[in-house]
Length: 614
Image (cartoon, rainbow, N blue to C red):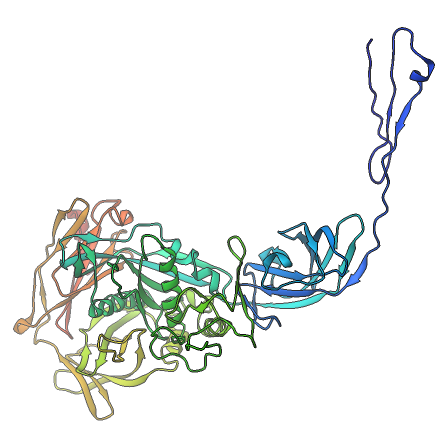
């Protein structure tokens, strides 16, 4: 017996009606030839009721009253508290989003469906419907409304609530890998292993009030210092030298609206310094690559030190020096929490799998020395305010042409003032950068540039700034690292406060003599060592600024500030520098005031171009 089924859909709101017709050969009962119709059960949609819900819009930290300002285009999770006196199971919700132009669209809750209860606990992430809103919708005044239903006996539409999202400049980061050569405690070299995305992704982007964090990588820089078991173990002075190097790079490259961050491997088996940065004024800091078992600590240190660059002091707790007395949420042990019972702030990771951080069991503010860490609204707002003042993206444009400047740096210490040798760089300082450098300095000094007869050629105010760590004796130090316009005929430099001369340097009668050749040697496989010879007038100690160029002298990157007439870089760690062979090398020798610069090119043809360009 052959049978055929013909499925004929009939129009229906809920489903199709199917009529089955059997075609039969042979003898069958008459009733078997009758068409049979199967009608689905038709359900009536439940009436939509109006409900009041609680909205909590979080971009990393939020108060129950939504008092933390919202940032345009930053990843955002909207938590909606919806309850029902009668338990409702299998309820799904959608967030409807509007702006001044009308309806933008709707998004489903990332934890659909769930059961509605009579009460909801804010500390339980799944007690709310949670929505991840497209970032492109989040600018200006944005209105949210929620629709929820289980398609059987429950449907609800909430009231609308409007929130304001305001622009904040992105955070632009330049990683400066530190190629560290051991001078004691071993004979090795060390350079951080790329890629470096973890420095910004594991923590910084989660707690900074910015729409995005961008990353660039600078050429590696060379530093020589002590090691332990061939692993860098820099002294306090080494950390200061590396900070000066990274700050000098930022100065030499035009003080862009980018935060330059030196990155190095550090021996930290029994504790170590993990980072150091300027307290406002300069966009420069240095930090370690973290522990092998927990690289996320490196991102936390980055957020901490760059937070100092935003003018944020330490928050109280666990031995942090000079904590900000205004911090509002300290516990019984004086540690900085992210909230308290009066302000029950909750942290929320809005980037990865959403993770909730209630104030009472998590966390300490990351600008303290306590662990584990998140951000308080207090620090979040401090960084936001600073970024609005000084991180305007328009300043990334070349608003002024580069011109010769003296690069000048130093430290004010109890045992005396250190005034570093002058170098000459081509750079620019726009008005915003100058305002940032003079914003709330820890003190002021004056830099005098003098001729051979002791006449003052120019005087410049110098803002003195703190760094994030005290010296080994626990004493605070002030420092400076800035650029002042170049003038001809400078033979001495003097730093003073009022009538008191803090430090003075006098140049030789002749500029340093720098040999027109350079020696390249290969050691430890891929480690390239470059050396030269130089001599100063009256045997004064020389210091060297080194730059490299991969485009035959069109552009340059600073790679070293060193007392030694040599530096070492790893070709495998900087393939872009060695892709076309040996890069051009520029060495500037300074006797403290007077300088001599020579460029060394790897081929005879390049040497001619280099000489013409001097």
